Image 1 (cartoon, rainbow, N blue to C red):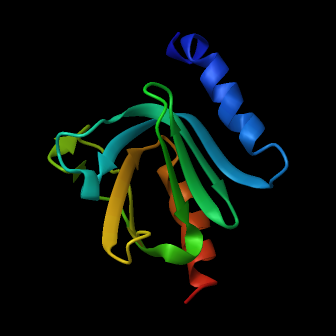
Image 2 (image 1 turned 90 degrees about the vertical axis):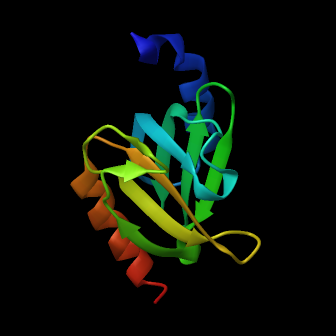
Amino acid sequence: MLKKIFRKRINEIHEKYNDKSVLLVDDISNFFGLESSGVRKVRGNGVLLLTEEELFFGMWKPKKELLIQIKSIIKITNPKSHMHRSVFKPLLKVTFTNENGESDSAAWYVPKLDDWNNVLNKLISKYK
């Protein structure tokens, strides 16, 4: 049901990556926030998309976007909470160096967590 309501936004994000090789995509990932934005900032659902060079998240509403270059990712972990929020299941937490050169992190709940871990860790290893 939710996916139908936000189909236009989902299609918009997919079109943005139409000419790139997408390795993984989750149209209904649950975003737990960006550490540098603070605990009270927006969290919500959206499209999490992975290419060889970037991890992209486009929130359904409000239209917020986060782009993380693979080469800037420091590590991937799977805690059960991020910024005092939890669904009591392991999350995909990405720790990376942001555009200011500082360490930052973002986390998502994705159903196929093992796939995301495996592919991301392989991509990260290319830059180490």
